[in-house]
Image (cartoon, rainbow, N blue to C red; front, side):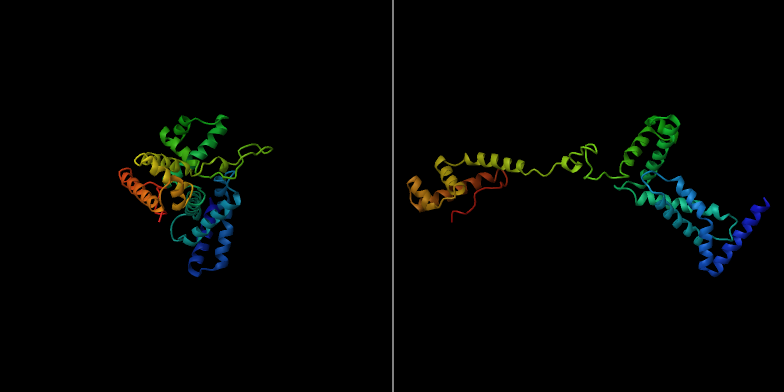
Length: 263
């Protein structure tokens, strides 16, 4: 007890000196003095996918903030003030920087609790816990536990370059399984609409349009094929296109409708 009292007086004296003189050397010495506390808290939140060195940097930052903000005049031990400050920095790190997909803050915190509970229960039960067991362990509803488990999947994104097969035979990547934009559906719909519109003109007009816009023949060449003058071919094309456009107004805009290339 006497040792603790002496340590408490020494601690208060050091922090009083720091607040009065803001001595950088004293500040560094206090940070070094309490680094074991930061390391202990960092280890508590260590995970396989989260390097301890990264968590130590975050915890150390929290420790520095605690040293700078501690009020020695308050009747409280520095460790009692530093622990929530350091833990707040660690939780903020997990909440704001390590999620691959943005998740609401309260759900992030619950997902982290569920993740820790899964580890604890797995070691205790020697198997993966059920949703009901997780919910009971955390004192929450099963639906909330399930939602938190699903949210935990946003903690890390899977690279699209990840092979789907084994190491010996990697095969396709996840990117290879993703679909792309298929413009063929739109073209098929346009063709079906144009086919319907073409029924509104005569067979002769359809043939003239086919020769002009599919075969890319000139009006003179078309006239020779069907036995009329170039002027008559031009009139047939204008009449057919005008009728198609009039009919199309009731069906909406159609891509690929013949334009004014006949001029």
